Length: 381
Length: 131
Image (cartoon, rainbow over all chains, first blue to last red; front, side):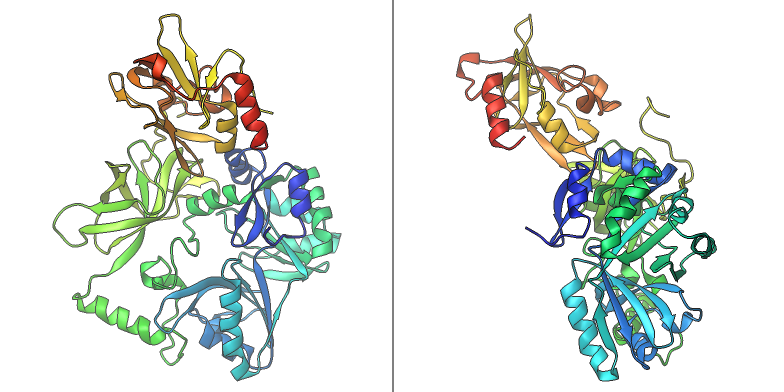
């Protein structure tokens, strides 16, 4: 038996299929994974993400600490409630985990890290925090629900006081606030608008039922994965890990190399990567989106061949692949040699199938983001 | 409890077999199997003329989550794969014993086909597996 969130029993009552996810017993789907996916793209869905690890940092030197710990620069967080997505890096530049940092007050920040990496993350954070007298408190008392979709914010607001509802609806993108005793943030992992809501664990079951009653669909981790992949968002352990650095993981935008005197962990290694890339003598890799042009389904670890003899030819690998319910085609993220390739071939059970290199996201706010794609299903244009 | 039609034969790996009037057999996956796989999004069936050895992977059914092999429950020669599944893989979910059939096979040496179960035996297997 794995660890269980405060909602476990409710998931079972709702008929969820339960799977192990990073040591947790989590709902992968309730009735139909594709149905849950469409519910989020078209209306609203709720996900139990209480397995994710919420960590509060407190102390006068917390900001200074985070400027060393995190590859992005928390100096960018100037307004209370503002969120920043980034990575924890090893000295080698490899990614320990990705995370969200919320700026609460000058001596209090909140981190949300992945469930599967909780132990190593906490050990890493604590080891570095002690030097700067930063207190590290894991918030196991909280449950977290992600309410996502075009109707998600309006439905969630119905559960709040009048004052709370207007405060929640006024939140800008990537901002959070303490509202009616909950921490509500306009963030997510689906490519749709919505909230992630942290609340006392004891409230979670009641809130879930109230959301269901408002027409918000119960959604499992299966739909969460297809939604995030359509949104072009990375999954730790698939698309990046300790053996890959952010620049070859589509995460260069989460690294702040300026100001140059900010000596964050991993900086020296990344400077060497950039110098190697600039020299042109050391082959680099990049994470790209793939759209399968032939019939089939792209899956992680399938081999990718970049044909030709020019820059960027060679082989790579799919890091995440699935069937996109919105595009009705298969999509993937793949790590391939850096270069100008626009067409690749993927080995699926011994057959070489054609895929087009595209720039993620594939879908955003319910709309396909790719030019001239068509569903490969003639019955369903 | 899954639907298990009485007039079919079954395998431990959740395929079903129906004998057609012309003596060929139709093969598919069971209601239990389609439910366990979830929404199917891609089905690859063998082409007519392909020779099948008993137990060899002969079709692939892919859900959003994963790809699964279908194993030949009989040895023989494929007369046709179901052409509808290329555009309608969900037929396997919606009608696993009807429109969702995978292939038709001319069996060689039917007497030597081991391991097929009756509907009641297959129901017992599902009960043991906790269906």
